Length: 479
Image 1 (cartoon, rainbow, N blue to C red):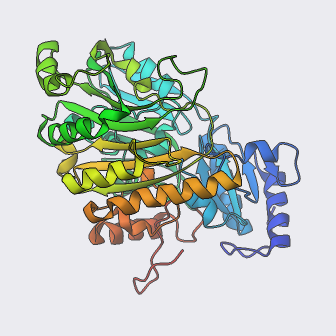
Image 2 (cartoon, helix red, strand yellow; image 1 turned 90 degrees about the vertical axis):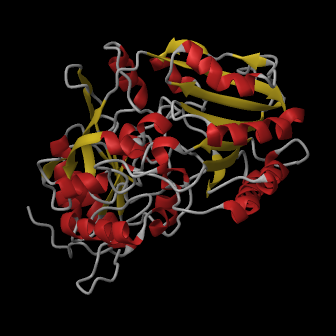
């Protein structure tokens, strides 16, 4: 059946509704339209503060379902935006979803471990928890993030900073292959021997190049790690941050850690001694023997934290070390790449989130960079390293429109306070607002990414959180 609509062009609202209805009739999987009872639940982002109202929401069960959706969308003048969990959806929603079909890839959830080759293959909608658990059964570990319910594909395509990052680098650089539906609906394999340019783009270039229906990545022989956290009262924030910031720059690559100020509400899920308190938390993992790890952490332990849980633990337990909230929530955040943190920078960080502020932010964080993250990875992708010493992130929960205004203002104030010490490329996985995507790349990488997008998506079928535009024939960027 042929649909008589102009391919690849956004349609007026009534035409878009007609196109979305036609898509549902022709698709080989469930498609929810705006008028359907299941639409409101299906359209929700992980962050409930993000309002996304796409033309439709599709739920493919196979790669062939995805292929058909992409072909139909191109014919009907609709665009496709893949989402598994819907993390980092703010930039996508802010750019407009009137002609976009969100493709929920959650049903593409599978995990296969090749323990001999030390490779995991996962479906495009798989989250970290089952993959980490499956790998651990073979004494292997993946370069997962700080939360067990983040989608592997989105995390990896954007970079991926985990607890082994300073030793082993970004997750993106250890992606070995991907099964991808490109702009004409073709299912392709991208690996070192088949379309290596597309593989390069997927390793840090984000979701502009197609719908990833399967991903393969390296695993590492890490059955356990020396990991945990230290807790201090907020009154010691300045003392602890001054020590930690120096220690973090000088520490060996074997350790990856973070520093956080947490302003915790009186929630029953929290341990009693943390309810309603403001505290400082240092957490991290050391890939070394117990004796070596003790020596690495000695300078922090000399501060005498009120709680110290660092010890030898199974590697699989690290997915919940950071205590990131699981399940959906509502929040607003800000982030910045910090090239260095001198005395004045420490003062600025604490002025925004420390014990002498009335901020609405629940958390202000500094993630330790350096090590393997500070130099290009051999055979790396579009993102293979960072120029800064720290990655800053601050955010707070949103319970009402009034609270949202205050949290948004405080998140902006947090990043402004650190502006004198920012530099280098932006880590787009942490950016929850629509920005110029080229902030995440150097100029040569940017142009290469745009060229690859032009090749695999010449009609602009795909919409991404942080969009890489196609090139016109004269080299200027397009949508």
